[in-house]
View 1: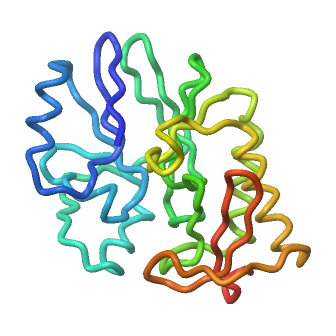
View 2: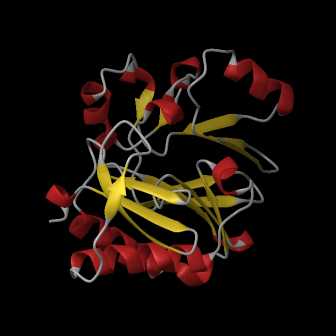
Length: 220
């Protein structure tokens, strides 16, 4: 979860999974008009979304609400697409669709400050591509290559679970390693080991800080 404040507005990126008064908590931090965006519809990112009057999220994520039987009312949700700009005054964040981890995953690019808010779209050390609702690795590689075309516009990557990587942003080497791992698995050059950290079985490969978990049945 991130709160990004500009001179005119603030943007809340994801709404966590707790049951507290997130809206009230945010009001104690900023009195600026607030926009809310959900990067993807997993329970640890969308949990308190219904506290807010208007929420942006790709409608490609709606199927996950049903898949995971989440009690989320979508009446106040607005579809978001590639290229949407959140204009906060002195800061602008561009939405880039990166389907893979989920069908409608998005990242937010703050090109002026060379920052990418990626949530779980490229993982936080561990990238889960083996759980229900993910796309194939082949489809995901298309998304990564599209994002790689914008690589000159960001240097620091703020992921969705920074505590897992020492509460520090990741860098372009991490991104390059994720791309490498996906390419090598697809090419048959890397064979994964059994992954048991989580509710769903999978195989994993790793390079540097990047660890890709995948389902061998959904490579293509």
